[in-house]
Image 1 (cartoon, rainbow, N blue to C red):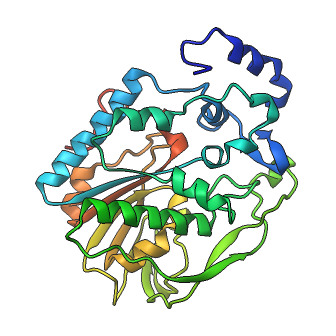
Image 2: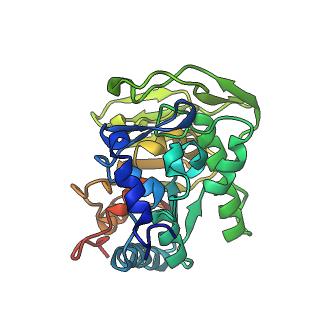
Length: 319
């Protein structure tokens, strides 16, 4: 490991390249860009410079272990879905000067310490899929809609393995992948557009319409394949003809947008709420939420970079 118990060579390389780290966005290879450390120490996470301490790993594990046990006592499924950073799927696109200093990430450390938790690790399948079609793009920190489709397949495989007597999770058939336009999240920082463009599934089957209620209380019937953006949360969906009769409480962030069409088709009803693990400004009280909504399933979808924000002493799940 170049950073953990190291001789300081990795830090010296980091300091030698301080000019490349002077801006809010760090430029990588082939037009790729990555947020710098002003956002949750993002670039330090990408190379392993910012890793989780034993205390931080333990805090996360205890937090989710408490939640899992409390939900299991009520017969409620829990799925923890960590949406990886682009650098975890495309590490080869990090800047050349990082070669040789990229180590394990907070996600690696959390997973290693939590084999008993129902965590979905999407990275392997996304890396494999990336060999054929873009699952992230050079100028956006989020997975594409196609990346979300790949991730849904990973979740389905994990769920089916954990619950072999349940009906398989629905995976919509596709005709292929379409490229749309460039969604440049970094344009405001002077980063030029770069290809490949944003990718979306070309679905071969029709999605059921969804009744969507958004944060301002308005309700509309929307196309089932349309994502539910973070800006609309808290939101709920009701789907006549959903694949199951289950209802799901989903704590999520912006990466959940690409998964939301599948949630809306799989579950008869969803409640989608921002978890605020980015800053813990409004930490979820799972006990109160479960008492209110009485879900069959609880999904916690969180972006990988939030893992550096481990729960502080005194912050719990409500259980």
